[in-house]
Length: 385
Picture 1 (cartoon, rainbow, N blue to C red):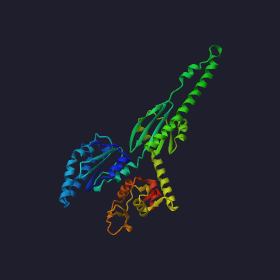
Picture 2: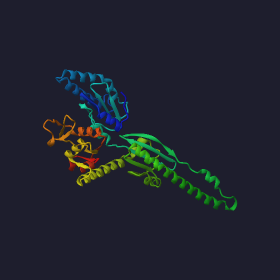
Picture 3: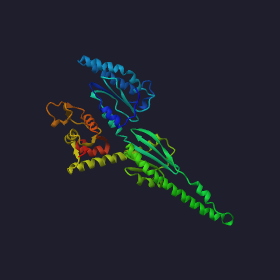
Picture 4: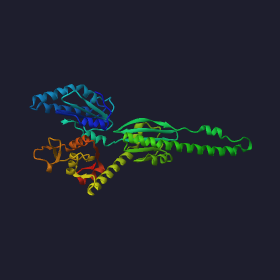
C-alpha cells in the first residue's frame, strides 16, 4: 500500500467505490502528542475499532458474507501496518478497501481525522470531506526585492512551486558614473538617485509582469485565496493585478520554510474561509428567496440533487438529517419519502455521494458560516439553473 496524493479527482473515484458485500473505510489520527508511548493511544483505539468490527461480522448469519469480510480483514494486515506506522508522514490517515476485490486506496494528510472503522456498500467519505474542507487550496506568494516564491497549500500540506528571481540593472550604475574632479561628490549623488529610481522602476515592472503568472497559477490550481507576503510596497503593486480573493500580509518572512509560512498565515486563511462561507450562504439565500437558482432546506436540496441541478452543496459540518434513499438512487426527506424507502441515518453521506456523482462542489461549513446556515436546517445549495 502506498499513500496517494489527495485531490478532488481522487475523492470522486473513492465515492464511486461500491460493493454489495461492503466497502471498508478506515480513519485514524496519528497524534504527535501520543508518539512517545510504546504503543500510542491512537494505535490502541484503531485496534479496538477493528476488533469491534470483527465481532460484528462474526455474528452475522450470512456465512458467505461473514467469511468474505473476515478474510478481507486478514488480507489487509500488512496495509494496516503501513497505515499505523508512526514513522510515516501525515497526521490523518484514511484507507478504503472493497471486500470483493484487492483494491486499496489510502491517503495521508496533515489534518486530524475522526478515528473510526466503517463498513457500508460504498466508501464512507464524510469525515474525509469534513477534514479537507477546513484547509481548502490556497496559494502563498512571498515577495521580496530579490524575487518571489510560490507555495501551494491545501489539506494541511505545502508544496514549494519554486520562484522567480528579479534582475537588478547593475550595468546602469557603471554607465552612469559621474565626472571626476571638484564635481565628483555632487554628480555621484545625482547619479545615485537616478540609479535608485531605475531600480525601483525595474522592480515595479518585474512585479507587474509576475502578477498574471500568479493569477494563472491560482486559476489552474483552484486556489480559493492568494496570500501575498512581503513589504506592503511590493504587495500593493501585485494585489490589484492578481484578481480574485487576495490577502496582503505585511511581513518579511522570505527565510521561513513552506510549512512555517502556512502556519504563520493560518489565522488569516481561517478568517477568509469563514467570510467566504457566510457570503456563499447569503448569496444562496438571496437566490432562493428571489426565485433564482438557490435551494434552502433538506426537501428542496434533495429535489435539486435528484434533478442533477446542484452546482454547490452547502452542509453544516455537524449537521444530521433524516431521510432515505430509494432503490433507484433518489433521495427523500423523512416526511416526503415513499413508504418503501427505508430510513438512512447517514443522509449527509448520501448527499455528498450524490453531489460528487453529478460533479457538484461540496462545501462544508462550520463556526459562524454554519450558524448562518442553521435557519435552513444546515443544508442548502446553489443551483445550475
